[in-house]
Length: 308
Ligand SMILES: [Zn+2]
Image 1 (cartoon, rainbow, N blue to C red):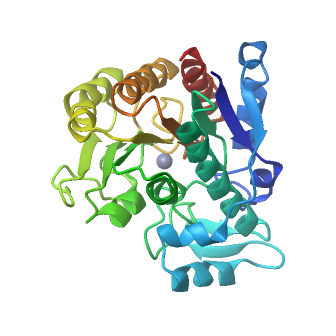
Image 2: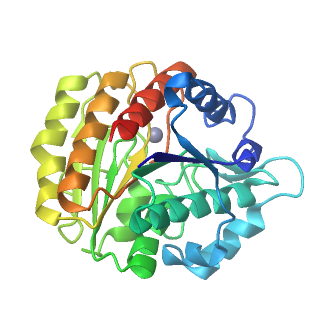
């Protein structure tokens, strides 16, 4: 069985202002590194058109219409202090959702080993009724609910190793014990949430990391908090909110991981997916803003996914 990669040219057409860290070149860097012969065995697929109705799995209609209204005909519109929309942003965001949902279909049908979705805009900061932090809609949250509604998954775990806390995912599942949300993230850092004391309905596991910590502290957070929570929860599906901005080269944070740490964490989650979830594992790109750090980290992550 193969690892599938979903991409789509529309993801390059979500345009952000000059100098913005969340830029199309991120995906070009990923494309380039995955062009290597080592990845010839990837099952490359074009992301399908997304179904707008599935946005409502995680966001109310009134909010969806508010986001739609911010999409400009030309130029770039500001959505919040650091989140913007260009004319093709709606289509990009909906296609990212389509890819994530298709990845869920793939792993439940059992026709691939696992899936990585290289899409933008990212999603984990988008709350029920607020687009923020470069994110319009919460793709991971929608995919989790999609698994529950379309594939009768009872319990879905989202593991978020982006260096920023996924406040949006936490917000959406705050009182929903059918979804486990686990996050490692730098604290203090944007968006300010993610304390250990934030536990929702007992389904939120935050493992904040102090600035300037690295591999050892990150792996300890996995071993002592994240992995035991997964073993206790017994998910039917594991979704990774795979941001790579905890890499030591990243300009937006001060955590010092290397690509080896992403390789290791991927292997740990694959092991848990094997133990609990019939190997069902879907990984969705979130952040990662140093092009070299991002490319090397994605290569390590996808390389591990392909090893099965
Ligand atoms: Zn991030």
